[in-house]
Length: 388
Ligand SMILES: *[C@@H]1O[C@H](CO)[C@@H](O)[C@H](O)[C@H]1NC(C)=O
Ligand SMILES: *[C@@H]1O[C@H](CO)[C@@H](O)[C@H](O)[C@H]1NC(C)=O
Ligand SMILES: *[C@@H]1O[C@H](CO)[C@@H](O)[C@H](O)[C@H]1NC(C)=O
Image (tube, rainbow, N blue to C red; front, side):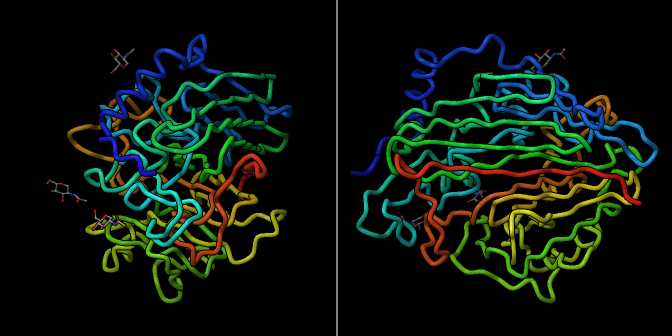
């Protein structure tokens, strides 16, 4: 059976269903602020999107900086008026893009197989693909605050059967914990009542200088052992191929400046037609889930982030198109706002995840279909330190 209902009609039904049946948290925009037990880090969250709004760690001078992008005015998290950059939420039920908004279960190449076909609401590229779970993704729903202590908070979300076109009810919880030595642990679990694709991720925008020393990424360095990235079309839809990074701007196996590498991407347009920068998924060569697989640091603030995770791949977005002059995004006051705005190539989104659109590319051989007998889980530890 295929869902052939027009996207807008379904969207209206979905929104109406929320109005009637969604559990209503007291205030989805009210902050929950956490502190690490040793005082080494602080962070703030809101139930809307299970969003992280602020993240403070100490720089090389021992001073706290808020190194996460976001809005001081929390009502902007609910708005589409600023181009909706997905500042800081959990994205799901299926992160990144779904080709044509379709897939089959069991999966098949570009949904061409005999399995049951599903059509998800399409919200990108003139309605030709689905980005981050549809028109109303997990980033745009009021999660419920279920548990809170001085250094940990848990949010949960019930995503009903049929919402955005996905099969089965999915119940997700995310726990954010601040541990000693400025260590941030994110843990997600989801269960599904029917077979359904699930891929969750945290969609955090970082500027490890909090825009103090510079307004670009030249002083931001990264290193990660990935010899291949997922090849995509001009609209960033995976083709099913993996491309070697050798001899390209995509090679971060040795530490290098992100900002200096951005112009080198111009010719190949890795981040899409006409795009300069990074908006790509790399596959980790070796991940034992114990050692950090991704590192990024600023030589100016001295702040370094090392990520340990159980995920197979990594999306990096270098804020290529964040600054639309018609819809400027004001910076937070502690990042120079609101008179200054967030500009292109001034921030980095880092998403630990699985292979993007593996549900349309069986050649990846990654099983992203979960269900009653197969719960989903996702773990990452973000350890901050100061360069020696
Ligand atoms: C926050 O943003 C909303 C939506 O743009 C606006 O109506 C409101 O006035 C803003 N609040 C403040 C305090 O600026
Ligand atoms: C996917 O969409 C493209 C462009 O919108 C179209 O040409 C193609 O036929 C579609 N593929 C399938 C399998 O529906
Ligand atoms: C979407 O439609 C507009 C207007 O027709 C066009 O200029 C643009 O290239 C289209 N974008 C894509 C990704 O197809």
